[in-house]
Length: 264
Image 1: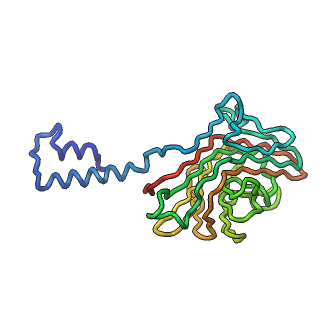
Image 2: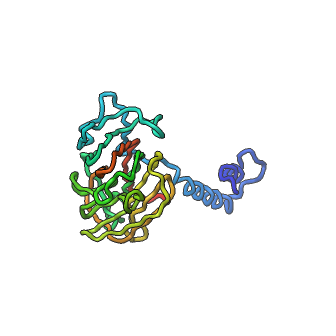
Image 3: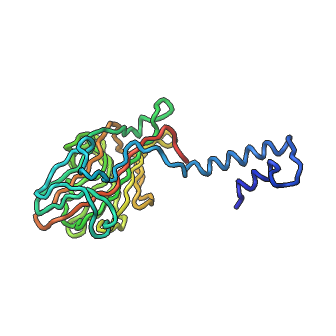
């Protein structure tokens, strides 16, 4: 593998005795420099538009979040089990309860509309999530992602995110984009929702094609290019338990940001 820094030093005659040939080495230096910059663009960290680590000792910030409470209300604090070293927002659900944590600000979800005529080109959502017992959740309503309305669930139209599929006790993760009631879905990711998992949604236009990419623990698990809504949306986590048992969701770090360029 070529060492770009070493090559630049060699070409620019730094710590080397060779003579600099302006006719050839200047172009070579420029080529190496451009290759080095492009190779490391993906390592640049974006400026976070929203970072929520639940550090506020006063509790959950109601300027940022709206909550639907089960019998035991949403709290922030140290996680439990596999999330024990994290700060989380959590709301233990009993039988036949619902809870929601939803943002109060909307974000641009426009995979088909972003392009050279728009400032923003990419919207990204990352979050950590642990579910104590996914088998007790209702597949038709539970949802984690973007929705056009704060009261939306998996059952509503024009949404982008993760849901659940399958009959108890075999519920599985599902990626979902929906346009006017017509969904595109994928499943079969062999996930363990009882573990602390990192989810990511990337909304972007690639080579003129609207695209939503879904990641689980940094691995790309699904790419959707059909049934993509173009709307401002809220980040939304909605949980609904069955009559058979309880479930405790723990939401770890959440971050959302936009980009004005597509990083290769």
